[in-house]
Length: 182
Image 1 (cartoon, one colour):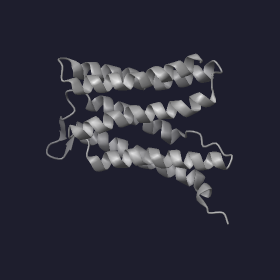
Image 2: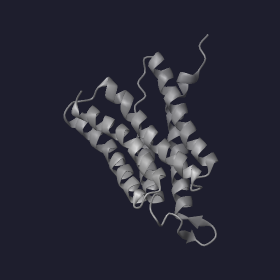
Image 3: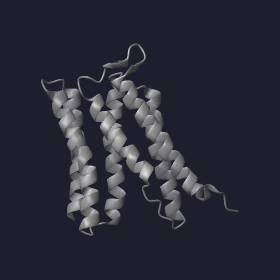
C-alpha cells in the first residue's frame, strides 16, 4: 500500500468521525466537524499530488479516490438536508450526477475506454468541498440579499451549477458510449 492510497483511506476513515461530530450535539462539535471535513477535503488534493509526483498512481487509487470524495460530500449533504440547509431535491441532483457519471465510467471500462476526471469535475469537487465548509460555519444562514439569498442558498446554487456543468461535459465528451450496438 503506497502513501497516496493511505492518504485516501485516511480520508474515508475521517467520514464517520465527521458524522459523529456533526450529529453529537456536544460543545464545539460543529467546529470539530468543520475541521475534520476541511482536512478530509484537503487530503483529496494531497493524495493526487503524491500519487503523480512519486509515481504512485495505481488502479486501486483510481478506484477508491473518487469513491472517497463522493462519500465525504454525500455524508455532509445528507446531514445538511436533515438540518434544512440543503433542499432534498438539490441533494438528489448532486448525488444523482455521481451515480450517472460512475455508470458512464463503467460503460467506458466495458468498451476499453478510460474516462478520466475532467477539469469541470475537479472544479465541481473543489466548489462542493468549499461550499460545504462554508455551510458548516456559524454564518451559513447570513442573508446576502435580504429575503432572497442566504450563504446556504449561494453555496447550494454553486454546487448545482458545477454539478450540472460537469455532468453535461462528461456526457458531451462520451455520448458515443451510450449508443446501442446491434
